[in-house]
Amino acid sequence: MVECERYGEIFNLRAQNFRLQKKRPALILAEKSGSKVLPTPPGYSIGRDENHYFSHMLNCLYDCRYCFLQGMYQSAHYVLFVNWEDFEEEIDESRRVASEASCYFSGYDCDSLAMDSITGFAGHFIPFFTDRQESWLELRTKSLNTKILEQHDPVPNIITAYTLTPEPIAKEVGHGAPQYRKRLDRVKSLTRQGWLVGLRLDPLVPWPGFADLYQEMIREVFSAVEADRIHSVTLGAMRFPKAMHERIVKLYPEDPLFALQEMSVREGQMSYRPEIETELVETIHRELSQYLPESRIFRQSS
Ligand code: SF4
Image (cartoon, rainbow, N blue to C red; front, side, top):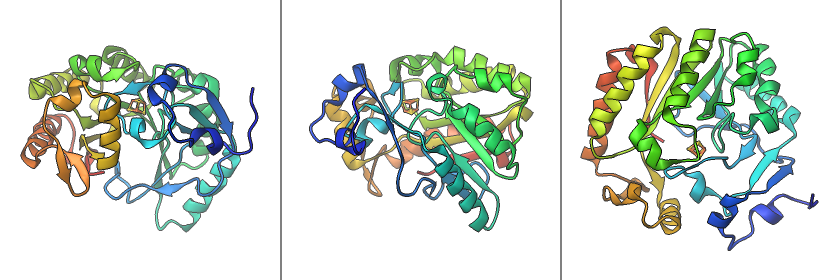
């Protein structure tokens, strides 16, 4: 173990080799100073007007090629913040000043559950949110690491949200993440146990045969899972801030994800042509509408 004064001394060093570090990342335990609970960008919602996120970790065990974490930090090391009581205090403070009950997103800068067997994050925050039933907690994940949820009775204000991508696409872009089919099994078992599960179809990944692949996946999901156990579905196009996109393309210049369609700058973000984006989102929205009311389908614009 190496001790240091501030985690940024290691994490924020310039000229680090992200790809090499990603092969063997170190785990940095740190105290989070400054703001711990922040408002989400506008348009980031699963049904509440007040939305916040908090990050107990920076970086992820997996390596999805569309993930903004590849371009967000200088380093691929994991940072685990350990002063969770300070996070809880800020969550309570944000609840106190909010005009209405809020949703808290925990998987903004990491996967909420991927490293849970080491961090114990979910085991700590499930009881905390159980006592605050008017506030929602979203645990966003691709992980099969759901033992802690299986050991608990379902908590109605805690939503485990699985990111799903059709199998052929997931195989190409979801490096290191559990296979689509295993994730779907986990969605099935958690919903059967009584947990509410969210489905996250953002980003929608443009791919040859896109519409058929996504429609088939949606049919499969809803033939396997009771729709009334699905809390919400989010849809969002693939977008990157320009500088982040440049950094990711530099890391993976030959990745098919960036070669399939031309991206250009729109509203300060790298995105696909508006007509392609609209077609992707509307095709999938139509398919979802056959299974869920509009009030549970959300288009994410950020
Ligand atoms: S699981 Fe989520 S956080 Fe982790 S690499 Fe993939 S997209 Fe990023």
